[in-house]
Amino acid sequence: SSRPAAPPGPAAQQFRPAALRTATASAMFGLLRLAAAAPRLRLPAAVTGARVTSLPFIPTDWVFRFAPFICRDRVRFLLRFNQISFAMGFGFFYLWAHTPYKCDHYEGFYESPLYNFVKADLEKTGQLEENVRIKVKHFYPHTE
Image 1: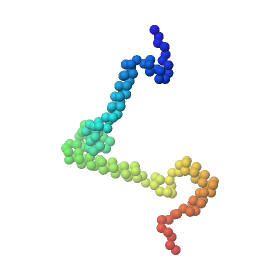
Image 2: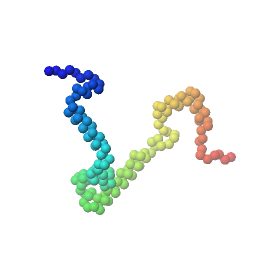
Image 3: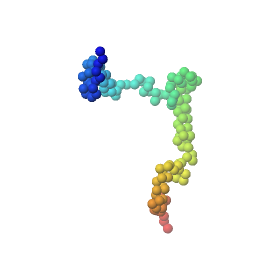
Image 4: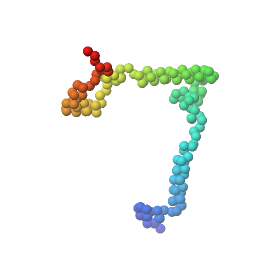
């Protein structure tokens, strides 16, 4: 009792059982219903408040479990929270985002392969010399 293979295309719908078609349609409508309801869903308060009430990159429950010396009372926790947040912000700015002598001036910046290709192309056509000649190198006009 082998069934013949279903022909490709829309005609294959007639060979699919009605119960299977209904289950597929209801699953698709379920996904559509979930997608429509997604903006109305609320995350738990612990998740939404984590950005405001936790140490950066460290879940607050880990602080209470693994570092009780930081959080013996509310005042000590607030003090440590402020100290750690300030130190991380200060370190980010001065150690990561403000690394000295790392391409923050025009004399020694990284020249990418695309930059070198375009510069060589301009040198071949003579446009680079013209651009350098007319480039303004001062902010205020010269007074003589």
